[in-house]
Length: 142
Image 1 (tube, helix red, strand yellow):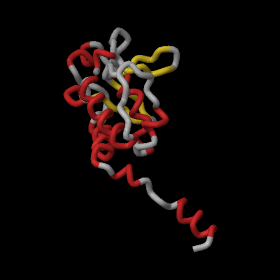
Image 2 (cartoon, rainbow, N blue to C red):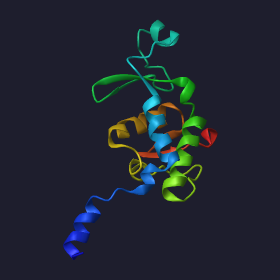
Image 3 (cartoon, helix red, strand yellow):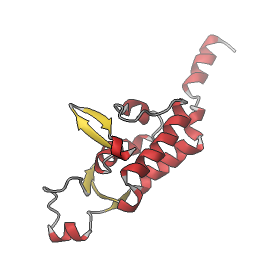
């Protein structure tokens, strides 16, 4: 095989870590974390969708599509557990508590169409807090 053939072959080689069960499960989890449409919880109906005083956002506009967070699936501890499993499987390293979340590394094992869901989910679940533009994992989520 020539050098050119080796280089071309490398371009089309798929990272096998992307097919590991925890990574696949995390991508599936991201898809299931949001429902279609605006939030219809009692609080949102009563406030007519005004989330101004909410600590955590309920409804999201992601790429022109209204989505709502599914609370039963997205507690901070649940999000952290799914993320830790995928992170460990993909990177072979532990995800540190209280650490700054490396969003670029996470996007490496998340399907591109799901990237826009990461930060809204992490913030709305209470998993992370944005401090000076960095996402810090919150100890109470761990």
